Length: 460
Ligand SMILES: Nc1ncnc2c1ncn2[C@@H]1O[C@H](COP(=O)(O)OP(=O)(O)OP(=O)(O)O)[C@@H](O)[C@H]1O
Ligand SMILES: [Mg+2]
Image (cartoon, rainbow, N blue to C red):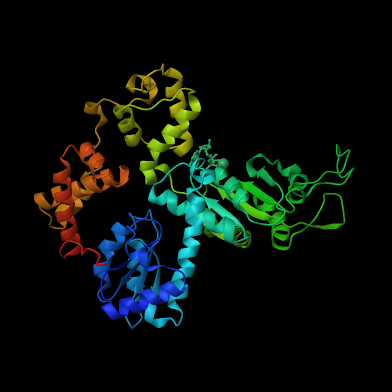
């Protein structure tokens, strides 16, 4: 845990704040802890824009959690709150507007620390690989939802992003006393004529072939979790059937007249854009709102490229028994490649490479199967046509050659840094420039975009 007074706060005020924090269990020594060592607090006053660059860096571009505390005696404008949040603040507290601000700070830090401990625990970190800001933010939401709520969860994300893995994690982390099993029902595999029996069970003789009574998914999930996978594929008649049991926890078996009660946590997943399906009338709005207690969006691998290498190494360790690694050329290839099937795609690619690989030594480019190799540069045509439109727009808007060139380099720098997880040396190598040149470009870019000097360093 760390604390910084970024701007504002006289010596006397800082002393009062430290004393108030001490009373709620946050020691003064937090001012000496390095920025980034667990959750942190940044106090600021005055033009909030000046705190933004510091917040970005201090939150590790979204890797860590930082609480922004305003020392202004007046309310922050809404715009300021959104900008602080998007710069990396996990939450915002207005110190002088709350009678118990120190308790509020302590409660948030305690909750974040608890979540962080679970996210970093072997159960999560060793099974759900990835440390990109987007993946970490999702894991925090998953842990928070699983541990601190009992409501339904809707997992939205493209195919192969890990929805089932996350559903299993939510069930594992769920803190209900005497929690029972996780029951998985894949909505794509239910034949409409058998759906009633699959969901609700049936009585003996309910239909031809029903030689014995049988429990359905809602009965089996009682006391546990029901995971409805591919819920977006449910045809309208089945959507209607599910409404009552999900809302009231009451159902009848097929061929029976008795109402049974069931109590379960519902998790649903789909790779469809369900809110859009609702808008277009293909999915019932009343059912959607019952499923969507918490909505968690799982980013495609393209939005967290830096996870590609740790994931590939994880899958390689599963595929081969002896210790193995990838050489630099293969790593570069893995980073640059597209994964339409997301993590599953990457996993299968690694398994194909592992089959070809003969140890010892790292996996090398020859292990990449022919079909998976990129086209040679001459025909790859990375800019074929794609750049025409934005460049045309820039010219129409009056931008000159220098400005267009600078913008393209800024984008290349941002992407290389994102892919390298913020590692300057790695990004510089990929961009074929020196570390120093990259540092200078970044500083110049920052000055241009903020319209102010380099970021203030934290005092204290
Ligand atoms: N973060 C991750 N760490 C380790 N393995 C992962 C991760 N994400 C996905 N996987 C693996 O990738 C594969 C696909 O994951 P999963 O089946 O959970 O995806 P899904 O989103 O349910 O896909 P679909 O929409 O196609 O059903 C599985 O083998 C899973 O173990
Ligand atoms: Mg799935």
